[in-house]
Image 1 (cartoon, helix red, strand yellow):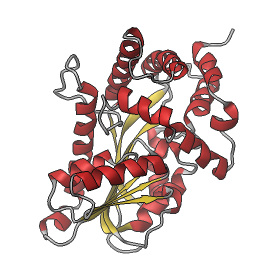
Image 2 (image 1 turned 180 degrees about the vertical axis):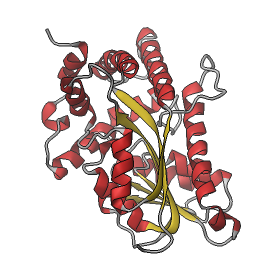
Image 3 (image 1 turned 120 degrees about the vertical axis):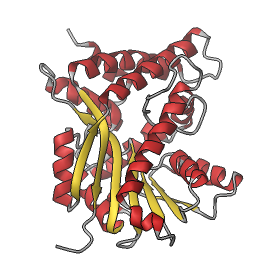
Length: 318
């Protein structure tokens, strides 16, 4: 008898979402994961609480029973990560010259929109993102709040970043590298575009190593989430070092991802119970209801880890 996690995979097209070994097919699958009208609406309502920020959150001090808790925690995670990165490049901030950063896999640009509004010292923020429909939204929102002169949105992949060498003070990414075809390639590109002495910071869903976790479970997650190179925290740290990053550190925030899954499940159930007033795809809602319940138990069993990796680019070449 198939496990619940395996049965969930029947709700998706394995020819689209399965691990293929082909980077072009992988890229097209990632687009379908996020850049259709149905998925854009689903993520905005379920993960963004109707806001632009669809990232997982950091819940310190957040009242989970209050409306908008998920969105508040998402913004708090963005702030937490940027403050960590800022501390790693304090000289660049304090010197008062131009300061730029790139968001690799920026989605709808919510992190950049928030950070540029909050921090006057950010001269330029560049959003690099694969999905053009998300990018249209990011450009539109930047223009609406008068930030289009400081925020640039570029369509492309972080594994072949269309930027020159040594361009950004910080390379930043929230919950995007899980879809990297190759982590070492991705981390190497981040290193290339970051200035010597600059910082790299990302959060991501990573592979756990709990007792009894089967290859079948890991394969099922990959088949439903466009995962080709799913690494543990230790392997991500090693891949960063292989790419050339120094002072690589992992901060374990796995307890927060469990809360994110719980709140997502609660939101999906609320939408279903209220008759789905926004007409989100019913099959998508039912699939995620089963899937999220599985995710919570999988976190408890050690299938997933989630947290932050931060690092520095050496000031001079070795």
